[in-house]
Image 1 (tube, rainbow, N blue to C red):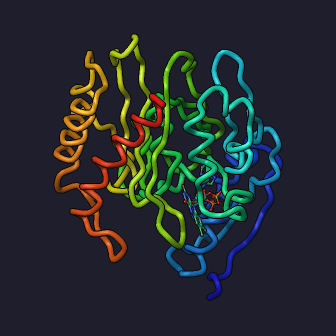
Image 2 (cartoon, rainbow, N blue to C red):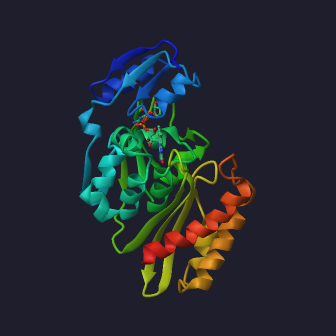
Image 3 (tube, rainbow, N blue to C red):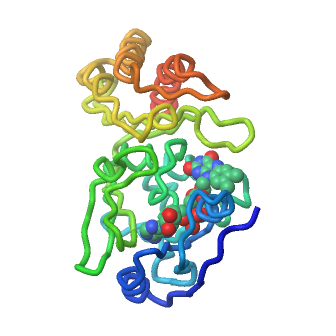
Length: 283
Ligand SMILES: Cc1cc2nc3c(=O)[nH]c(=O)nc-3n(C[C@H](O)[C@H](O)[C@H](O)COP(=O)(O)OP(=O)(O)OC[C@H]3O[C@@H](n4cnc5c(N)ncnc54)[C@H](O)[C@@H]3O)c2cc1C
């Protein structure tokens, strides 16, 4: 399979990438290429111009200073291995380590992943649970978008044409407990169901829970009904079961199905993986 003919340009800065996008309505950014190139080979997309941002070093930084900032071009392998990410938000390091295989993790970037917005991706689920902010730059300036508002539908984000994701910012989560639990597709490792739990605890009692599901639904979504069930409760087996039931009810007919996992199976697994994520966070 060969892609349609296209032009290629390597951008040396974000400003240059933004300018090229503004001048070429039929252009696409190229980061790790692990979603875009397969889609081009299948002729699902046929951009006339690829703007390669892969050599823009300023987009590769990971730094913790008040908040954790992850450049859009940080690869999954670097996110998984980063001491700052492991310390600041271990659920993200774990989620990144579970993505695809080593080659995918070496090339795929966190910015490309969220811009592509595959429903079976792992980072969107975890970033919403953290209350992360996505920073973008376009011809008319910069914007900050809450991760919760960024993922709009299947392969659809709040990005406007011509905007580049520059970095992801994760607030200080010290004192919170977090974990990501994932059922992987046996071949690709994409999430059939993934649930992230970020818990704020006072002794045994849950002060606040942020619970997010991905894989089973069109875009990563907060499980607000389950969050409400857990608020102010001791997180014993009965509370977890009640939260799982609430999550299953909330997902309802939104559960997606395919030949690997029908909708009713994914819906049931949301409950299972929600409990695993919470137990793992507490453990
Ligand atoms: C075999 C295989 C298995 C995988 N398994 C998993 C998995 O288990 N979990 C998972 O989460 N992911 C998985 N992935 C996806 C992978 O993790 C990559 O993150 C994903 O392919 C996109 O990242 P990329 O850097 O390759 O982006 P690209 O393919 O280069 O780009 C993807 C899209 O995003 C746009 N884009 C790229 N960077 C930016 C930016 N900075 N700003 C705005 N738009 C941008 C591009 O124009 C394009 O439309 C898998 C991929 C493969 C091939």
